[in-house]
Length: 269
Image 1 (cartoon, rainbow, N blue to C red):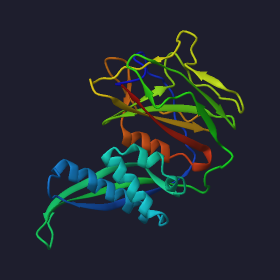
Image 2 (image 1 turned 30 degrees about the vertical axis):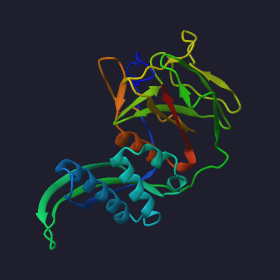
Image 3 (image 1 turned 120 degrees about the vertical axis):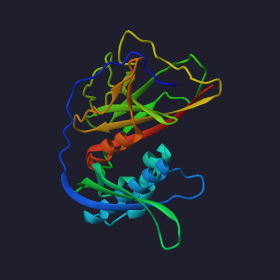
């Protein structure tokens, strides 16, 4: 399914995330080029290692193993490892943004070819953990759907909140809520709302892009403040296309006490 919605238009908004940020320079990551690993893939993995090093330099030493899992999952598009792992709710910082300063190639003392990357990064530091009282019930999503079937579901939060929904599929990602038909809104505590929110639609038509069964992965991110996701581009079909790296950077830039997320998978047959 290339997108749950084919009519999404650009939402003009700004994102404000109030957290302490530390600027880290010259964080180094190295990746050996071996086996079937291409030079481009090695560069991406080296950046992943550099991000973990940036966290160390910023003073975030707890849960380093979780960070390593996070960025490896980011590289491998293993979305569920990021958003279904409880360890990630306990980490105390994240790389909000970074720029690559240099990329060098060489041979180490064991005669292995490698790529070494240096980055400058803005590291967000959290001063609070997750809020156990902030939860949302999501009901009505089945494990499997027939091609062309309608998707409907409801959400009921325990606290007032806002919502961004992402569709993660294969090597692609898109923002599917809010959109031009369903605007950003406040979801009231205890109020059950059914999607689609628009009265113009009975449901979201699910269409797969291949002849084989297709797994779709929805990421629901509820936030206590209105923190819209804006880093996307419109394709010719009007889909709000983004990347997993940008989505995870936005997600982890939000303090854990101000967000709760749910990762739901289903298959279109």
